[in-house]
Amino acid sequence: MECYRIHMGKAKCAVDLGDGSERGEYVNQDYILSKLGRPHRSISLMYCYYPLDAGWPGRASVVHASPDVSFAWDFPYDDYFTYKGGLGGSTEGEPFEYMREIRRHGQDVSLTLTIDPHVSDEHLAAIGEDLRPFGRVFLRINHEATGNWFSFNKRCTYQEVADFFVRASRIIKEHAPNVQTIICIGGIEDLAKEEMEKEKEFAQTIPVADIWSVDKYMALHWGWPYDVAEHGGNSHSRSTVADTYEKTKRSFERFRHLNGGAAKPMTMAEFNADGDVTGPYEQADMVREFCDKLETEQADWFSAFTFYQFRDRGRLGLEIEDPNNAEVGIAQPVLETYKEIIHRDWFSPQITRQEGEAALPLTLRWSNSEDAEGVAIPLHFEKNPTFCEAVFEDESNLMLELNGKWFYKAPGTRTVDMMAAFFEKPLQGETDLTLKIFAPPATGENDLSQEDGMFHCDTTLTSLPKVRIRFEPVEK
Image 1 (cartoon, helix red, strand yellow):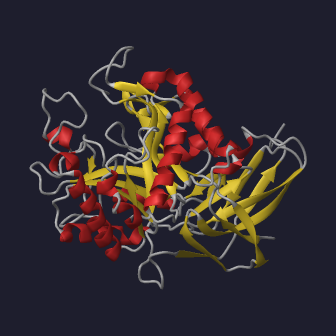
Image 2 (cartoon, one colour):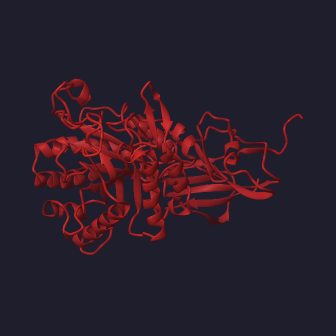
Image 3 (cartoon, one colour):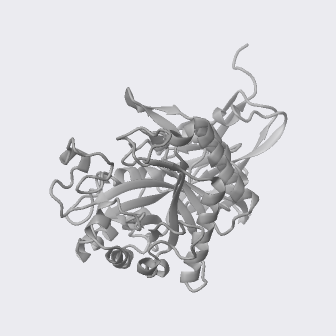
């Protein structure tokens, strides 16, 4: 079978997706892939680590439940799911089982971790050891650090929080060089001011972090779920797309200034417009307008955003969680808007043909979701197919792309039905397409015993799939 090597690289603007938080549960990657049609650069998980607290490792809203609580962050420690690793912990449960699934599906992990700044160096070293097998990990430590709602801000001064970020980044990366740390602060919050909020305290974090970030919601109801956003209320806000864009750009410019003029990747680690404030239609409109602006202005200073989030109990999700059944999501208009956006070229990884022959056995290297070697198989279609499936003989773990639609093949799967690639984009006539194949780590972890195994995972294919294409029903 004819085939050739390909490489998957960066998008002009990468897209990441939040999956679970204090507002919603984790949704499996097969479901998300089926709904959105492509993998993301990274999936964002949100956890907390307060191992010195009473009640740990129970979730704060469970072990410290109280009728007096009237704000999401009024518990003794942050009400995220609890990080089960760390000193004396285990990597068998959360979030590691989800991290493995995310990586098997060809995506990196973005881990938001709020941490008690009073933990010892040994605790931080243990977190680093936990993260060593997971390839490139984006680690956002104590995010929104110039705010006043998280427990780490209530326990420490802003200077102490900034000092802790520097210490935690250093120690964790000493043990896990595969980790890239993210500093997330308020940035420019007033366009009339040149400086960022708490700039003096946090200036030291900017050269230390690998990535800069601000969280910008174009509309947000922070009083959820304890009140309802109504006109004249004081627990919600709404800005404009133009102001949000300008504040983000000005934040990048200020970050760069404080880094001696040298740029680093700039992201928005939480991005959305809250449907509690805008309603479902204007939510979708605002998301589209912001992304249109990034594309129209060719915003090469902006490297990625994370949509918050896939499924939400409020109105910050592509789906709303069904109040009758937490396993059911109710798609919102923004889901189709977002799906259209992430399939645009500006937001899609760039796949290019490589020089040289491809012959079996074929070793494919997976470094991360922006640096992966694959193989492409040319396919000829007489017209829109009636059947199209790939049949495998081996136990490989693969991501497949055909006609713009992505599919996952688990190690035990033998046949992947690819007809869904033609439901939304039927062929209009005779066409040549390529079936693209990539091989992320089958266990979700890298093999650290291999040379440079912390950063790369190699998979050898001894066979290629047999592709069955038919253009008529089996019987008429």
